[in-house]
Image (tube, rainbow, N blue to C red; front, side, top):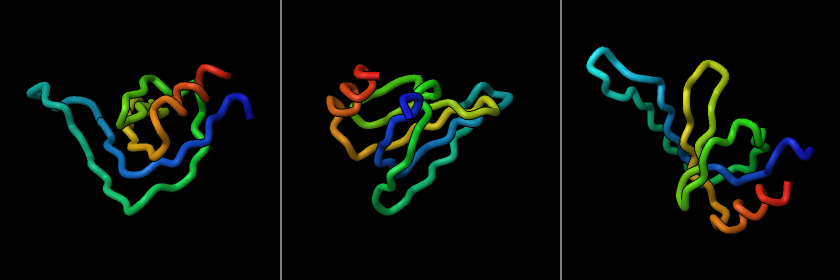
Length: 80
């Protein structure tokens, strides 16, 4: 399971790319609470204090809210 990290993920925003006016096409999904998920480490592109950015197989980007502390997630990733 070294290729995965367990996180508690909540609401998310999907970036579907850009329209003909170069405006980002976003889809916002609100959920109640957080659910534990296994995330493939190679899909993680960025980590901020609020979001973890992952890619998706068809070129979309997903910004997930996560419950853990930023430093805890950073330490998990650094230990892999």
